[in-house]
Image 1 (cartoon, rainbow, N blue to C red):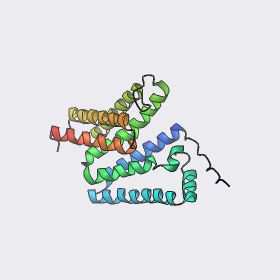
Image 2: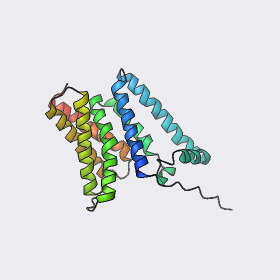
Image 3: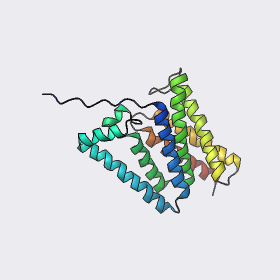
Image 4: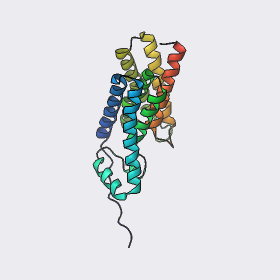
Length: 213
């Protein structure tokens, strides 16, 4: 007798997943801002990392665990994530790597670019995307990503860091542009990993060129 097919998981409402996306970014930004040292940040993000990957391993070892987790996360999970590493796990992995290696100000850029620009790109791309680029991305969505990412990064840098406006703007522009290119070019990896890492790397390189302390 053939095994019963697993219950399907409906694609989440875009608004629900987008709100989770933004909330995850806000939590990550809060961690970057309030942790008293890099060691504390590494420990906190590392705890999330261990928990996330433990769940990924458990649900691959046990179909029952996978089914329960997919039911629990149904409001925000894509059906394709049933048998793939979910996007939140990839974002937590990116956060750990930034905690370990990125300048913390540049990591903030990576976090907010992903949190706000990626949902903006999806919203605009789905509703208004007409000019197709690659991997189901549109020119309209990519431009929305760049604009939202620039605004998010510029606001974060201006509010939390005593830098000249021109420096904030240049770092924001390069971080958002790099994130948009990562979002456009990512096909095999998950863009919740590639976007924050690419945006933070570009922001860090710009800060180095500008000799920002």
